[in-house]
Image (tube, rainbow, N blue to C red; front, side, top):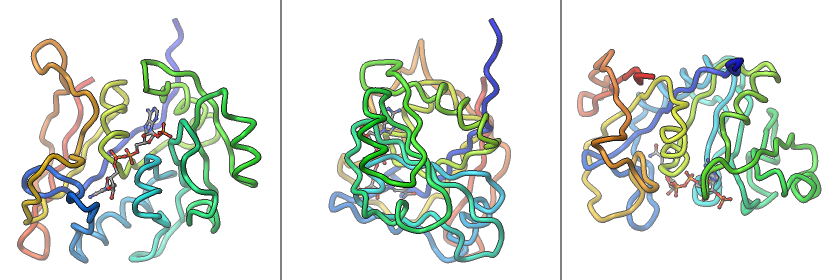
Length: 220
Ligand SMILES: NC(=O)c1ccc[n+]([C@@H]2O[C@H](COP(=O)([O-])OP(=O)(O)OC[C@H]3O[C@@H](n4cnc5c(N)ncnc54)[C@H](OP(=O)(O)O)[C@@H]3O)[C@@H](O)[C@H]2O)c1
């Protein structure tokens, strides 16, 4: 069987020491200014940035370059049920945005989000869209590198589908506690038969002196 050509997928996340990417009230501003610059440098070196629907609902991010100059990456929102509002910043301002949704929702998506590119794909597992299919279609649209910026559920589905090449995580000096969204949420692996295995490639002490940035390759 011919292997599909896929973009290289890097997940970037900033989490608390106890692995949370948001607090119980949804607060998620965990990066210092140096970490924000690191994130924006990474954005500028990727063809596209990708987020899940809840991140758009909670944070309403622009996903543009502001802390460094360079080429604005294309934005990608994974929203199977089209729950993100059409007034969200990712849909209102340039650059280009793609929505990845369930194939049965394509017609509705084209109506709800005028001017936005829509990619419809089937489900691979119960609640998980076939993001391999979506990534191969993005590759055909010239996208060779994707920076995934969360949240935890999107990160989980990409690990579950074995589509992650690199994980970059900044550990921010807070503890949030509780059972809110973590770096990789969803059902989780059993840990014995199935898990994701990583190889540590780099450890950087952040310029702020109080955060650590770790870079891992994901074993395929
Ligand atoms: N600290 C950080 O670096 C950071 C970064 C990003 C986000 N966050 C925080 O994380 C929280 C959001 O994370 P989250 O885990 O709740 O949500 P999320 O991953 O942003 O979005 C989850 C939603 O996206 C859709 N989705 C994503 N992948 C899918 C797939 N493969 N198949 C089908 N649907 C898929 C589903 O929407 P449908 O219901 O439409 O199917 C799902 O309900 C927010 O509080 C945000 O502030 C923190």
